[in-house]
Length: 589
Ligand code: X8Z
Ligand code: ZN
Image (cartoon, rainbow, N blue to C red; front, side):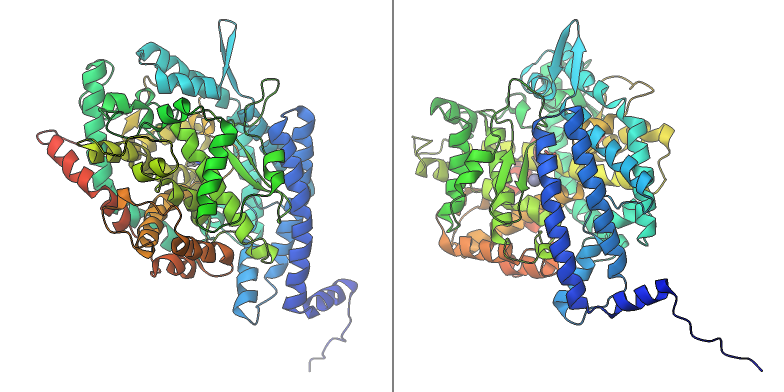
């Protein structure tokens, strides 16, 4: 005969029973309140670290993140006890699980080490300099060399030089991954890779497949562009520097990471008189950083969105300070989850920066649109949406628009203007696609252990070659960690978001142009001043993260799937043109 043990409530059991008794509603209210409060102090600490990189600000940011990481991970763990009775509650519980980028290990000393190393990596990137012959150059200076110089030796030196800053990052990076993997496991994921892939309203494998599907839809076009650009580079530099076949040497692409090729448009054959030479227009009209920002703001306002709060201009950093190190990589901040929005950017007067300001204001207007949502819904439908908004507006920077705002005087498009303009756009938007895809594919394999420490760099270059069709000028040194020379790697910012955004922005553009009643080729459409298009966009932005992303997508496009037909349609005339030009070439690498 068995006897039932007497029921004894231990203190621990009692506590669990009490906390479980809390309703989901109360639990979520507390989570929104606590996280909302703490995130503000994290953002202030990070703002100061990013704007004044010193040992002290790095420590302060890391301490704030350690606290916040513990709080966020704790809430994520607790959320597993709740089911939620409404769609809203279920969604908030889901978002709570994925609230952080780096889940904190429960062990507080591991957590503190993780945030300390991560803050050090970010500061090292922001203050990184390549020094040679008593001359030190920062990223912006080196990037300008890659954009402007046409001397192969100078290009190689600047390209290799910047990569020297990420050599010391490698062991720290590995450590952070190790700790974040512990945090991810404690949350119930296999590793950080699955945690990152879990935030897209579908299974991890479905998400990977989705990206591959989209890539296979655009890859043939990328190969055509790659083929044409390779031929033009060969004509410019000759066989020794730029071979006719195989992967292209990365230092020749006009950009530190080969992620965007618009800086070599002269070599590729874009005629500035036929295309839109926005850099010259800005310089001629004596635009400064503020005027560029105001112009971008004005676009959003023309769609019916609010003007930016005065504090935006008082508190943003628009110009590179001369007296201190800052993280120059452009970013948009939602400091108090209300109206204290800011951007931090070292603006230079050129087209690339003009486009990036629109990108940043896309984030800012998303923040403003969803500011009245609960904290957990204060995010994009998925992170790709956040990255796509400003870029959607960029697509409306057309000849007609530039005339409307008085930057461009003549009103007749020259012959062949379309092809030159589309080629210029493809050097940005199409060239970017494999890069956008590859960074996380690479990191996932580090996180899940498929790429061991001693293969960090060889695996990186295998992927660069496979996806981008690029190669280093010379074999890379043993100790190099070239992925670390890209901002998002030491900062642990996921990157698939940009790949998604590059597909989505064309879907948004096509749908909004239709709403605006535009008839004609997509690259000529601008939604400037169109309230109907603006209302639709604003409606989606206001939803924040409150609904699964397919529902947000449907608000603007009427469809619930991401698809590459819009980007293909936008560039269709160029694709035909490139195929004609590439006839007889053996494309690919
Ligand atoms: O990082 C950015 C923005 C800030 S979210 C400036 N972008 C990616 C990059 O620079 O690598 C925008 C496009 C891709
Ligand atoms: Zn962005």
